[in-house]
Amino acid sequence: MIFKWKLNRTLIFGIFLTFGILLSCSNATHHNQHAQTFSGNSRLDIIIERGKLIAATPLGVSSYFLYRGEPMGYQYELLKEFAASLGVTLEIHIESDPDNAIERLNEGVYDVVAMNLMITRERSKIVDFSLPISQTRQVLVQRKPENWRKMKTMDDVEKHLIRNSVELKEKTVHVGSNSSHYYRLLHLQQEIGGNIRILKLPGKNPEDLLQMVAKGEIDFTICDETLSKIGQKYYPELDVQTQVSLAQDVGWAVGKGNETLLSKLNHWWTEFEKTTHARLLSDRYINNPRGIHPGQRDYFAHKGNNLSAYDDMIKRYSAYVNWDWRLLAALIYQESNFRNDVVSRAGAFGIMQMMPQTASIYGVDSTSAPKEQIAAGVKFIRWIDHELKKEISDPTERQKFVLAAYNVGLAHVYDARRLAAKNNKNPNVWSGNVDYYLRNKSKAAYYSDSVVRYGYCRGEEPYKFVNEILSRYDHYKKALND
Image 1 (tube, rainbow, N blue to C red):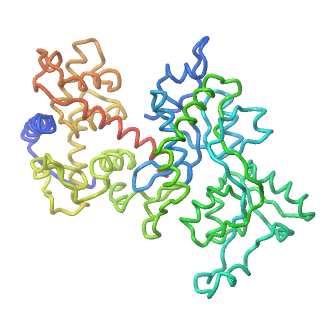
Image 2: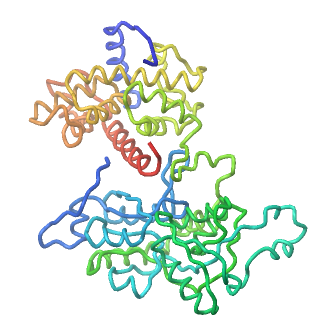
């Protein structure tokens, strides 16, 4: 047991009921989803009816990653825009193997594959490609000499680098197991009339290989020019200037024969690429990415790195409520973006955004250290969970109610449960049941109902609060080790 505390439970309950009412007035999921079959409907119809676009993309700086708790990436941003144009939400699946992604696309598991796929004749036989999203070349990725920063001239650096493909004879180049780079190297061997030792690394995507070159674990790899330039912002010790192919088109893939989806995708892209937003995204991620300062790389979540400076604390205290630490982290990000200096207009403060009256019960205030505030916030969560556990036995389902109560107060959640029960909905199930009634408690027809004890609240806020945290938690589960 991490904490030992005793409080007057009746007093606390009364305070939190009152707090929930005052706060609402003052402020007044992931699951794997396989192919769905809708008889007679096109793939586009299926997406619209489902209300969700299911897309595959790699984990990495050019596609999809977390930075300080926020999902980012060029492919991710584009997919969000396309999903929004369809009026649906986006569900991301991480895929590093193009062949596996294409196979699952053709099985109907994915709607779209967005992973910098070069549009080749062979691939076009098994999938349909969108209009080119971008154009790129394949380049050799190599490491600058160890003391390159201290060299007097660039000519001194150049002496240590390969600038002619012929110099790759008898060199070892590592590539992913199912990448177009492997086939390019096979052709390159014929062009230079010599052997290149090509070693496949199963399970490694291009960004893994970039990092391995930067760390000196391998000497060479082949990468798309666009991705390699982004990678160079994070790893300035890399050189990516030596081209090994002509320019090639890159596009998204949809299942073979999905003509209506492909037409919709191409129409969207034709219009979107003309917009200022499209140019800003390209500048942000490709043309002039700001990169991440070396001192901040700890919070660049790519294959197991950290979300924030508070990860160890979050992991420790999440055990107190038997939560996945990534769920607690998603809540904290939602509240404060991992900042301890935030004060809301309603007076909530610190990393857990607790109201002063609530915080005082747990012995913290705005001057308390982040560790103490996280501990207090988790005690509050534990109390809410204990109250709800009496009737909601499923811990995963209960977490949704706890999140809502953390935002709006337990009193309004109880009102929504009573409304659900009165209208023959399950008061112990959040989605499609209690969430609907909490969301509508700003309407007189609902907050004036005889079963409602605590009146009006802006229910849209806790509704979005829960959904956004669960969505972010889904991102964290995909991009972070547990």
